[in-house]
Length: 506
Image (tube, rainbow, N blue to C red):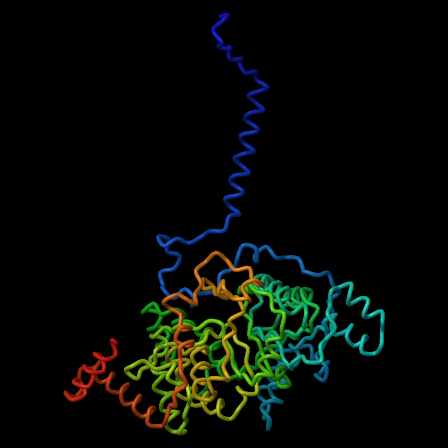
């Protein structure tokens, strides 16, 4: 109709309809792909795990980590024997190990060395190889190091290593962690890695890990003595204890392997033969994230500033896993007449353990401190108390309480400039700090400021002498609490408790 200003709509052809359908299908595919790749954020209404202590669950493996199949650098990986170790072994290695374990040994270190020798492998990294050539005067080595981005070794490097307790199935999770650790720090320093396993490492694991770093890498099996239930523990009672904890829903309450791990990290890893000539360690676990670039050497910092233990996250332990750890620790201090200038960090107003500890999945510390007679005596005391198996003592509170007893506060360091995530808990430097500019922190709550963090307590802690009298008083209060729980506390203690509880509220 002329003059109306209305145009008639054209009837679409079959070809146009087909094009439109294809276009629409492409849009749907692209949108679904984008949604799948978007990281999932857990809202308050979304319960991933029923247990409130998410950090005690098995470390989650990111989708990116699961897809890591190629080495970061292409390299010819050659595995050989550790220098100075045996190189020839019988074909029947199981029979060899059985024979070694049955042989009387005067020196337990030599026994462990002989036992694990067939399962100790070493890869000499490219950085160490080129450094040796450079030290011999090779200009070609310097050119090659520049091409590969390998920084020549500094003379101030500490005698240190990354120590990784890991299983073969955790390879891909660790490759993602290793990539971050190399990019953020180790590509400039080339500290070696030491991998420990209660089972032999697979060729796939050793080759993949070695191809992802220019540093030296050593793989070793754990001695049998370090990963077993000791003779003085009644295995029947230990089994029943695990079953009871599992029935109550305690995290890892029914796991024997978890207890082996905690006991090994508490009292044996620093005795491993491949670490005997190492002074410092940085513990690394698979699946963790590192958020900040480090342009200095934490090992050298610890050594030069007189530090012996360090941490990045402080939190509270599960009370049901350590019901008597505090009692045994106080009894040990009483018998040894141990004093401290910051043991009060771990004590509540009522004399009980407040459950604060330094999370040991990240720790940089002195191996010589752990090898000291004082620490050895504490671990032996705890081991004989059987709490690693009858309860579920973790290595984190053991290391923490040992530091509180045996180290001065100025010998313990908080690495505020290291951004870190383990499982569902992450921390980063404050946004107002200079270190924050060297970090790529996730858009997640900072655990440092959460109600479950013990870091605020650490920061406001004043040094206060903890004496023999304080230990005795704490033991008395703990004992009275236990009597109160059973309903047999004497009246005078009940009255005293009322006043403690009243003033403790302020």
